[in-house]
Length: 347
Image (cartoon, rainbow, N blue to C red; front, side, top):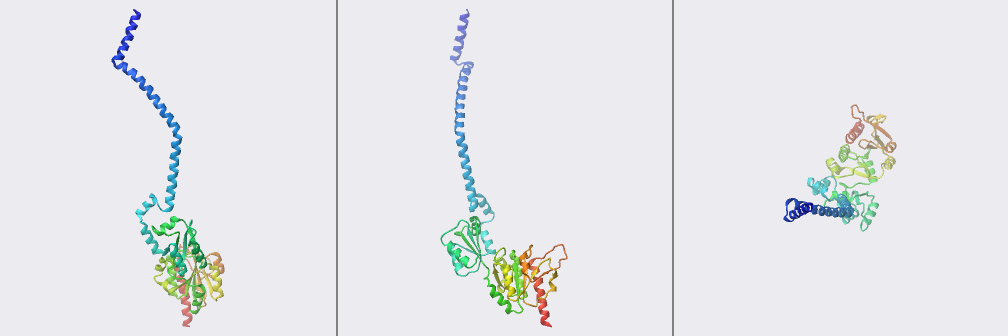
């Protein structure tokens, strides 16, 4: 009996599986699906472990390449960030704005011909990694003519000229030719008693333009400016001078201190301006040949320049601000000189 029951049970279970009963098929197929899924999952995990290092390395390599490409594009003036800026301010518009302030020529042949033609140049920009070819000749001629050469990144040069090819060199031209210092001294001595204005590091083109205008109105023979750390004769200076630049000679020198010594040798009384001066500007006699020294905005004249002056004068400051605009200070001082000289002639 016991054997028969067990036989019937097996037979019933087997028959149930054969008939595809829900319980039988679920159990059998579920067991197979689970084991198969486990094996597939295991193989995938093993494969991911084997290739995971290579995938990460590949991603890192792509990331490094992308970062390097982005940096190259940024430095060369390409890429999305630069293009987005161009949508706000087109490249051609930026070039036109530069033209308004300071004119320039670019390209190796154009710059070389400008140098050989003795065209007045404020400075030459040279691409940092540019070398060889006609650049060697350009540097040699610039050295002979004592033109300032400044090395700058390619991205800066691209920003200046825009889409045009600069060939690694840009030359800023002067709004007017400079005169030689000795020529300016002779002209000042001819306009007796003689008046010159020496600027020690004026950096604002509007201030320089204003000073040129005052110098012309006061009858000064000319203005002397340094080559370095000071504004040159740009288009903005010419505009700010309201036409006075065409009537005032400007000499550009390498060393203000040595220039003051030369002016003293030529018979000029060198008068500097300083807020710490022991005497006011009206307490000095200006009826002799005079060279007035005006300091930079904020900093004033340098220590060495002050030591080279024969006398220092100050302007009284009774308000909360302890200094005046360089152009305003120049006007006050030059017209005191005009007043004294007119008074002397009238006597």
